[in-house]
Structure formats: C-alpha cells, structure tokens
Length: 390
Image 1 (cartoon, rainbow, N blue to C red):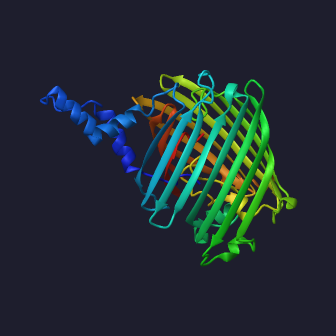
Image 2 (cartoon, one colour):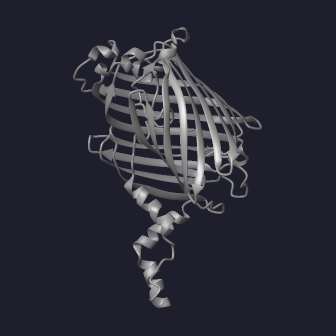
Image 3 (cartoon, helix red, strand yellow):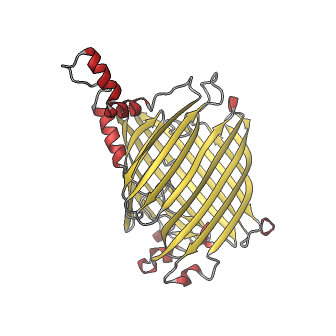
C-alpha cells in the first residue's frame, strides 16, 4: 500500500507557481542591485527555482535529489501530512546510455492514526550487468476487511474495521543473461498483525491474526523500456516464483507465482498508450495476509486495497498518457479484474470494471508525481504517488 489517496495542497501550489511565475520575477521599478537582493532573499522565488530545476537531467551530478510534501486528505486516511524524497543517480557518470537508478524515501502520518515510512528503488550497476530492485516499508493503519473470496468482498455488510500493523521487505538481484534479459534470486519477508477486531471475527476463518511469511525464489524479466519509471516505448515481461516452505519458519506453507506483461507505444505527439496484464496465483495453505488482492495505487485504482482477495487474481489495464504543456500531463484508463480460488471458479459476473482519470506533474526528469481518481463497482477513490502505476 503506497500513499493511499493523497491530495497534496503544497504540490498543487508549487506546480502552479512553477508554471505561472517566472523564476526571476521582481518589481521592475527596483534598481538592479535591489533586485538581486530581492531575488536572493525572496523565499517564494527560492521555492519556484527549486521546483523549476528539479526535473533537469543533471548527468554530471552523482545524485539528483529533491523533496516534496504537504497536507492531504482521503476517505481512508482522512487529513494527514506526507513527505517524499526522490533521487536519480547513475553508477557510471561516463555511461549516459544506461537508465538512471532511482531511490525514493517516503513518510506519512494522518489524523486517524495512519503512520507509514518506507524506502524503495532500483540500483543499476555499470554497463547494466546487474540490477537490484528493493522495497521496505512499515505502516500502522486502521484498515477494513471483508473476508476471503469475491462474494465476501461484494457483501457490504461484511465491512469490518481493524488495526493492521505491517512490515514488508522485498529484494531481487538480477543478472543480465543477454540484451534485455535478466534472471536472479528473489526474497521476501512480511509481518502482519491484525488487532482490535470488534465484530465479524469469523471472516478470518479461524486463521492466525499474526502472520510471518518468509519467501525465497527467482525472477526472470525481459525489459526493453526506454525508461524504467516512465516508459515511452518498449516492453516489460516479468515472471516471479516464490516459495514459503515450513522449514523457513512459516506457519503456513504456500507458493506464489506472479506474471506481469507491459507494453508502451507512442501514438502521436506527446501521447503514449500503455497496457498491462497482471496475474498472481498462490497455491498451498496461503494465509489471509498473503492472498492476492485487487486495488491500491498500482492496479485497479479506486478499489479499496484488499477488499477483494482470494488465492488468485488477474487484472488488465489500458492507459492513455498525454503530455499537455510544460511539465503537465494527464491520463485516462480503463481496466478490469477479478479474484478467484482456482481458474475453474472464474465467473463473468465476477469481473470488476475499472476506469479513471489522472493528472501528472514532472517532479524530476522522467519521474512524475501522479494524482489519480479511479472508479469501480460501487466505490471510487484518489491515489497520490510517485512514478507511473506501471
């Protein structure tokens, strides 16, 4: 769960200032010397310059780091304060052809008791011989649970409030086997603690409310994207297999297979058509906290993350991304998805629709801040995040 439905007023204020105000704006009646002093000391000018220069591709700089944040509101987390620090860097300054590495540090607190801190990114070694993808975060969140399976998720009466405490760590180390082809080991640790359940305890089906999942496996990917965080063209296909056996101290022994296939095409000036097919299949004795879920900030945007959960899920999204002016852009998307215990149980009436619209602001070079509003069956919601959904 990343940045659930943020509407950052500081972001919007900063964007408007950068787009509307010249960086060297001063009173034309001032003398040259006085104007220099005003430019130097005017905090508004400093803020404008900071954001105006934040998206420059500073190839000769070891790391291009910027910070953005501010208040936000959402139907889930209510009023809060979020902060994001994003950095781009290259492991070899002499090689500007390889994609830049990315690092994001984020934190958030809200009035309902939501607290979250985390780090994520990808590190590309010189000559792109190796890649490390990593994600680690902690959050405490007054969450909701509807049970397991499509029918339970669809039943509004099942909505149950509880406190979810979660820590998660994911990493994979990829070796380049051939141009655009990578293979390597992957590992994961997830700790989830469900607390303060007031009613509908039966929805957990007598499973442990505290789960610890230790997973190891491998990942293979084919990647021809021109940019990892914001592709204009290319393809990305990833197959990940993880095992959670009992000898790794798992109370629930299960396995997970995840497939992602993305494609990106330029359709006209400033327009990119992006498509994603994503599927996750778990088999064995999968705990409630590790079931496949729909919703969130990356797929099926607008659905409450985890309302629909089961042993497997599949979703597809088609998104049109359009650059509008300067550092501003917009997107529209349509999609669909469903959850199911096994393939033979998939029903056409269980397919959930998804569509929405979003605004994009280029925070750094090829790194967008995105504000999306998604619609689904009987629900909708905002998502504020760094980087594209896929």
